[in-house]
Image 1 (cartoon, rainbow, N blue to C red):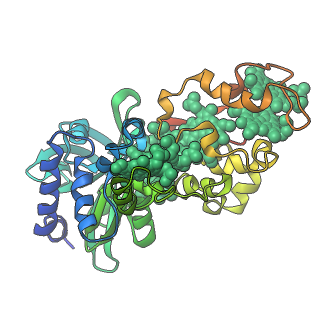
Image 2: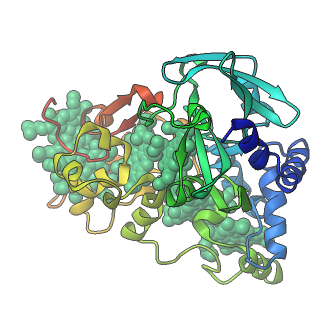
Image 3: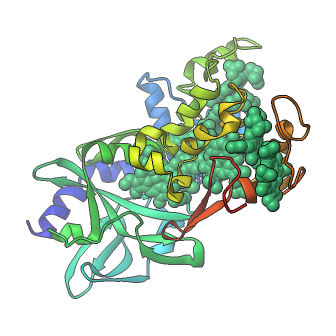
Length: 376
Ligand code: HEC
Ligand code: HEC
Ligand code: HEC
Ligand code: HEC
Ligand code: HEC
Ligand code: HEC
Ligand code: HEC
């Protein structure tokens, strides 16, 4: 099918344009980073599914609201047309080479688009942006497919914060494109497409080339659940009953389930990988932590939030705070905890949780299988 026909069919649907325009105009209001999320959540609350949006939480939880605003969670999904995204691509070129070609990015009346000059002149519209830009931003567009219904194209060019450059999108095998559209992006269908949106947003389901009920980013209510009833009670009485939102059941295991839903649990990897534990598993912190003696022998006392305030970005946590987390268990030699014979009061992370660089992702990850490494 010619590209033009597909592109027209898919991307310029009047209803989705209207929705996007509504969101964009909100984006220019007082709260640029989050306002388009709240437009959608107000709509959701009216629909009775109980989501109120993070702006409402601010009223009573200012500190967590402000911390969360600086976390990658609060910025991991945006419209590609937003200035903070479009400005990283528009006016630039990226030479992928064979078999895809040279991408030229530009703004058009609908936002951001890309073409392959001289080869595929038809512009390919770029719709959504995943990743906060703390490390990288990858673009995603929904399209109609004759066999699969709605599909998502993950664009082949990614922006990397490291040296402010464009490069190949990680995790895409170099295959000969079967259609014009596949020259622009790798096609995802069904669950892979839905899960991609699921992990980067609070609510939203892909239906007919649109994300219905979209609240962008990993916001308060993604972890704590819909807040309408909690807010109603908090406004009606001085002290709302505890756990009218969130979970009182969060113990170390259910909390690892919460974070691992996106940061990956062992079920997300192959048995072979699990057995061999290659360096690349450092990317999946829950998988590592579950193997660590710190976790196994603590009998439930160690969880992700022992070391991470879930609202605070990792960039705002100092090395000495991390060391203090280790020392709360390891400073004094007891029956249940040993202290370090090599360095009892500093430098723990570089020896016992070394960082592996994933150059293709433009970032690195710390091995959460806390242990004495062979090279130590
Ligand atoms: C709904 C999916 C989801 C859940 C649940 C989730 N995360 Fe994340 N997390 C992400 C995504 C997506 C990113 C990448 C953010 C970006 O684009 O920079 C991320 C990034 C992070 C980062 C690094 C970025 C930063 O600014 O510090 C930390 C640390 C983190 N998550 C910790 C946690 C912890 C701890 C939990 C559980 C309490 C958790 N996450 C639950 C999806 C999730
Ligand atoms: C199972 C949940 C999950 C799925 C599915 C998922 N992501 Fe992510 N994504 C994460 C988490 C967690 C991070 C944080 C860092 C990491 O683990 O790479 C992240 C980070 C990113 C980043 C920022 C890079 C970085 O390391 O900060 C980009 C870009 C991204 N994802 C794009 C995508 C795209 C595009 C898709 C779908 C094709 C997708 N993700 C599917 C959970 C997910
Ligand atoms: C990535 C998941 C995640 C997100 C996003 C998140 N929280 Fe939390 N929050 C948690 C977890 C887990 C705990 C329990 C932490 C603990 O037990 O130490 C918690 C605890 C809390 C608490 C009680 C303890 C405290 O810190 O005062 C409040 C209030 C709270 N969150 C509000 C918010 C608000 C408001 C937002 C959005 C601005 C938000 N949370 C976003 C995971 C999250
Ligand atoms: C009108 C005030 C108000 C609003 C709005 C509000 N909260 Fe609360 N919240 C409270 C009070 C009061 C408490 C109990 C005391 C405390 O822990 O701060 C509380 C407690 C919590 C807790 C701790 C668990 C518990 O129930 O004891 C979480 C988590 C939480 N709120 C999340 C949220 C989230 C998420 C939002 C937004 C959807 C929100 N709150 C909006 C007033 C409010
Ligand atoms: C909640 C308590 C707790 C925290 C926090 C904690 N650990 Fe542990 N850790 C343990 C327990 C329990 C063991 C098993 C008994 C022992 O060796 O002390 C252990 C074992 C270890 C071991 C030996 C592992 C092995 O396989 O022999 C190392 C190394 C270690 N911890 C380092 C650290 C570092 C580094 C940190 C901080 C990043 C940390 N721990 C945080 C409880 C904890
Ligand atoms: C320079 C690297 C280095 C640093 C820094 C370091 N360690 Fe170690 N640690 C080691 C080595 C090597 C061993 C194994 C020693 C042995 O078996 O004789 C070890 C052993 C341990 C053990 C197991 C003790 C035992 O009796 O087997 C624990 C627990 C531990 N370290 C915790 C920590 C903590 C907590 C910190 C930070 C306060 C830390 N380490 C800093 C290298 C380091
Ligand atoms: C014993 C302490 C400890 C525990 C428990 C822990 N972390 Fe970490 N985590 C760290 C340290 C230290 C870093 C590196 C901080 C830095 O960048 O300097 C880190 C970094 C991260 C990052 C940023 C990417 C990376 O790997 O460098 C993510 C995401 C993360 N942790 C998620 C989790 C999740 C999810 C859990 C629960 C399964 C968890 N962590 C449990 C100590 C811990």
